[in-house]
Length: 322
Image (cartoon, rainbow, N blue to C red; front, side, top):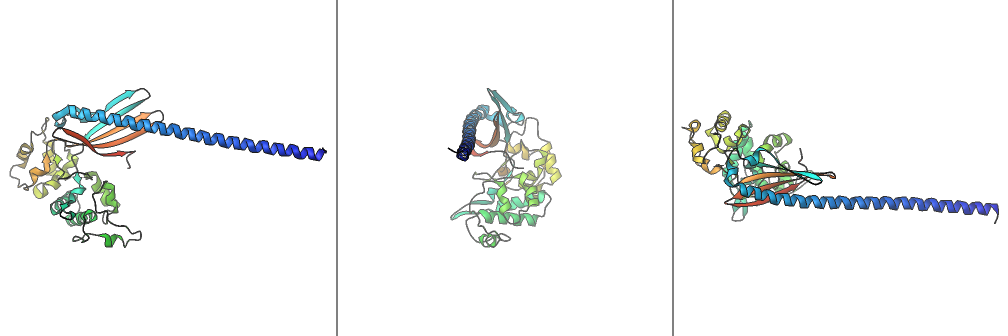
């Protein structure tokens, strides 16, 4: 074999060696990524099962608390429950979720499906007015929100239906069904960024039937617009704040006692006042935060409790959007 042939053979061997090295590095990287994905998937599955177990335990805690939960001083709402375990920590926080305006109240079951609820639309307009906006604007927003979820195609006065949304540059249709999240309001005409920012903290989208009632024993002065909206023109914003501030340390015994307090004496309350208020926490929000070396997982659960029955009606997993 000549010197040139030996050189060509050596070069060929070197190229093959380099190619095999590159392939080996690539295969090693693929195997490492696959292993990491497997570990991550296993950790995620373990976290899901851990949160499921914590949720079951939390439901048992709520059931064991009984009527004590309905007291303003209920320890369940005062501080989080911290559960350390091998390799991590779980933090469970409970809060009363009753005090909000359920945007899904704007419609009610009818013969042919969901139809607009005029009484709820007026309460929504009252809430908008109590937050400092124009009442007529609140009535228009209520009409558009009701049109967005009701089953008919006839727009309410000031409302929008499919015809209006399909004419947008990016056309879409109304869902004709209850909202799953308050954030869906941003898809409704009139709910601009500023309007949404004003209303969202007072709203909720609950998958329950019947009017959402306010718990007078867990209202705070910041909730005054909700109380004012529920009672219509009977109270001013400052009067609603004073009424809430007069809450006894042990809370109001019942709604009748709340409505008969001196600050409301002589006030012409609407006929529906008692049906809008309660002294029990029928809706409880629960946040479970699981922290382990590999990361963290967060779940929010909405719990409905009534007549000794406790069950989860909504879950969301992941970090809360700002």
